[in-house]
Length: 287
Length: 347
Image (cartoon, rainbow over all chains, first blue to last red; front, side, top):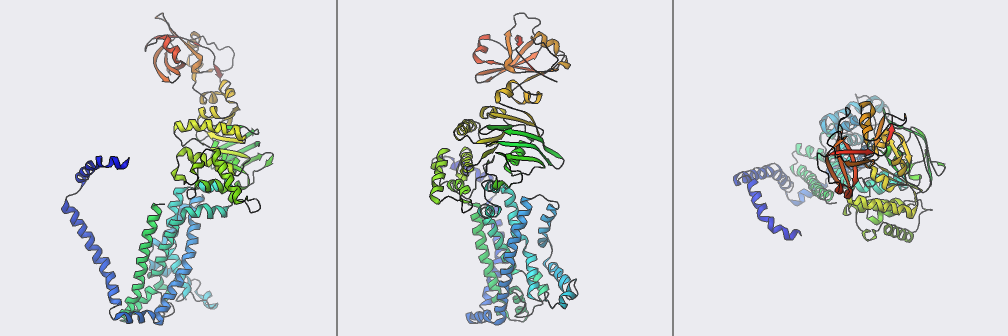
């Protein structure tokens, strides 16, 4: 049917489009502005990162990446992501479940609280942990006595990253689960499935793309976080430097190739994230 | 199997959804819970299913106290108003779900599951759709799949929440008949919720009328229609003309041939088909004037205006068969004599 009726209406649609369209000069100047803005602020800087990283050749790039401090930074960044992303995935699903499936006092307060890490400056987030666990902090003395190091050590970095990234998964799931309602879960329960079985067989398949999307964003931020981590890390080379911190330290030491080589890894991560994000968005709308 | 509800009460905050409900559903019946929206009928159904907890009272299925049992252990089948099919599973997998989640020792083998699912899909006449996903089906098809899914676990009772509420009028009519026939075939004790009195009368063998969280009347459709227990039921089931004797309608009713024989009450409810119409030859003292009429298919509904009544000015509705109406050759503004055959009296 459609193929038959289409040509009949085509002229009409074209005419309608023309009538509703802005003049050509508006169209082209807007496109020019948008494109030059993107190239000036995104494409050129990104290209520069790669040019600078390879400015002394492939060998210098490779040796910059394989020096012990850089490798330690990569390892630490991966460790932080491996610990924080699963924890925040579990937390995000639990929080979304609690908010969308139960009625309780302080629910809207909890919903607002989840957004807190987005609205607070990352530096403040880092400082919170210094105030809690630092030498002068609330638990500082107790921690000192028991020889536990949190600030200027890996646990502090993980805590700060956990705090910064916890909204991502919950934020993705809450609107979706609200929209879906819980009738499918009730149906599964009425058919004799237990709570756990219902969660895996009905809930997870329905939220999986949104969940993956949230995990992806969470991971990107966990690997790229600078502000909060910078406050709690202490910048000890080879010990508490994550990749973003390593870029800064190298740059301040006039090690341009080292700085940009590390930066190129983060840039590559960003591009991969973007591609996966686009793919997941496509998947979500074309289920 | 039989269902017994004793003294069920449920509050949502300050709102009383159900107030001391006692109800017995004998085995094999098809019962309609009928009432206006907000009367507590869906809450009552969800309490029987175990999807909602009672504040007070017990739920007994076949004599077993199920009040504290989880929904997944009650062995009920529940059909949701919006179907609630698993959208990521095919029709086949939807129906098979209840069998696949059984504990290992009770779970049938794959061959038996396949056989059973196809048999159920045959029963709802949709086996040819077994590979489709729910969003590829029409509303009526989805509802039938939802029913097949609920039947797969061989429930002791079947509970349906507004099963036809989200469907087109024509599909709804077909499915009502179909559900009635299916119930005859399976004979599983069933309760369905509806706000549509026509649907309740057409499908159910027993109707329970609810209002404000209380049972107003329980009985067969004809019982409820012919002997409404109170003014609410009379008004809710079918159309009714209400005459309030306090509003000086008594004299007018006498001219229409209706006396208040006993002291049963002061409010008369008259069904439109209990009013007999005659064209009045004399141009004076006719009790009513024909204002307008509507075609309802086989019936004509006449809208009459009362003459010489000091009471309410609400129109009176009468109904008669189409061909009888044609014989009378009435026109708008004609004077009408009428005779009321019977009325229900309420306080």
